[in-house]
Image 1 (cartoon, rainbow, N blue to C red):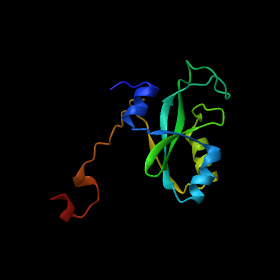
Image 2 (image 1 turned 90 degrees about the horizontal axis):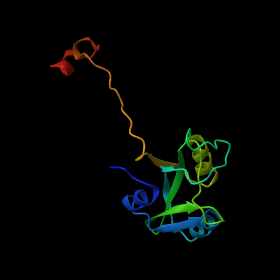
Image 3 (image 1 turned 45 degrees about the horizontal axis):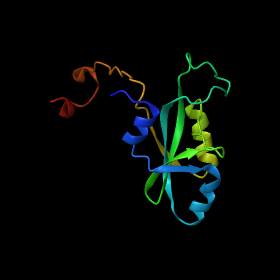
Length: 130
């Protein structure tokens, strides 16, 4: 299935938006979930040091859960908050009190090639190979 940012948010059942400034308020109220989600989006912004959208068409965005509902994190200006790398998202998560998060990429098809394992030469005891 091919997504654009809007259809991806429908698929992820994003219920609304929240700004970073609102996070401490909902955390203090006990309404902020324990985990967040970093998810792949098509870039909306041109800047950020990786400005060629033809070379770097994707960015990372974040969902946080408030009252059990997934909300997209927006900047104070009302735009979707974007990061160029997962390392930067991870640093943001840690800095904002998230101890763990999920990562999902529904936009880039990946192929994981599994190694061809020969059970008999794997070194496992015979009880596991029969």
